[in-house]
Length: 264
Image (cartoon, rainbow, N blue to C red; front, side, top):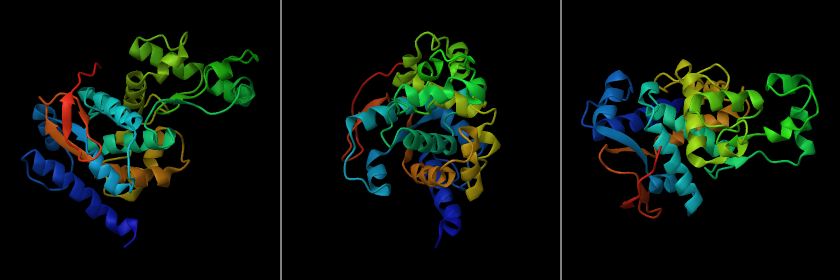
């Protein structure tokens, strides 16, 4: 069967598994009752062993482990935004996976200084909030993070939202926790494009929900590839009791190792 026929079963099976693990009726539809149950006694975590199986990879780097754990710290934090909704989490994981060239680490947009002249003057510079002069702000405010925030305008927005001076020190967007917060807040509040994930992803049972969600980040480029990643990532999400501290996870078996406290 093609993805259009398999999607409903795949997403429902993933959601039913999460619901059953929380002890609620597994109907395959993630709605308000499921989200409430999650927030009351559980939090989301990542099954690295399942990731290796689903994505057919033989090993996972420490950087990948750290990147995913940093993302989940943010996903479990912003409850007022439903940031732990597993459908949103799976899409944000797919976005980070794609934008960081599969590393899950906050990175800087590739290219030399002259490559970023395109952000320095003209209409693109204006759209990004950069000055019209050729003063180097195209390079200074080049893409960074899990989601490549670009341009003075975006750095200023997240400076105001996070209370962190990204304008004076744009490399702070490479901090894994800061970057995870930017991805989470931006996708759920519409900070990137004015569009929010909840405008597109309802129950995740229609393929176009996942495909169109790319508009939250960056138009429609690579939207189907990212949609496919998201559906796979949903299979790799699990729930754990909320009193389980953030932990290091063994990449071989997926079991929790001695906990490490992660600030958010």
